[in-house]
Image 1 (cartoon, rainbow, N blue to C red):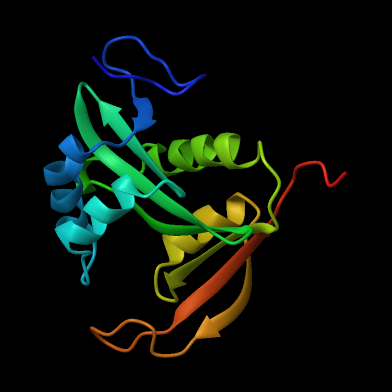
Image 2 (cartoon, one colour; image 1 turned 135 degrees about the horizontal axis):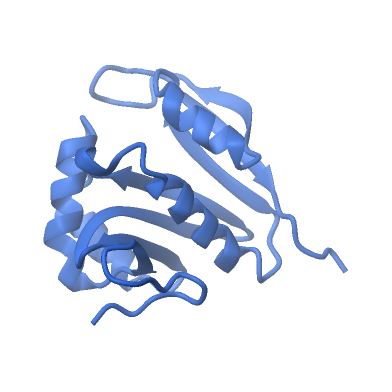
Length: 163
């Protein structure tokens, strides 16, 4: 049985967003290898799944993990570390749905905002993040070790109450 987050339950065949578990590692690693030229190692995912400050969400369709979002709190800023959707499920709003669930959870408690890095060539991801209010704030030169591509640093302010 899939345990959904509040507001993310569904009927058969519809996607469910839930917290990831260690049992999801094989599917996470498979999606990661199909998505990125510099995939995270299995142990990095295992570490994030057990880290109390991390938020690890899975996008499940028909009982199969097809996407995930992993974020971590650094002092008072949420950092989206990894967002990936399997090739077969892209352009079906999985990334948007994961980001919506992420914001529903992270906006409940005070923090300064959200940050992430994305390859400067990944126009579709940049557009997705912009649609959620992220703005480019800088560039990390040569950030990606496979081809020394730059990373765009993006930022989004916290939208909660400041009082």
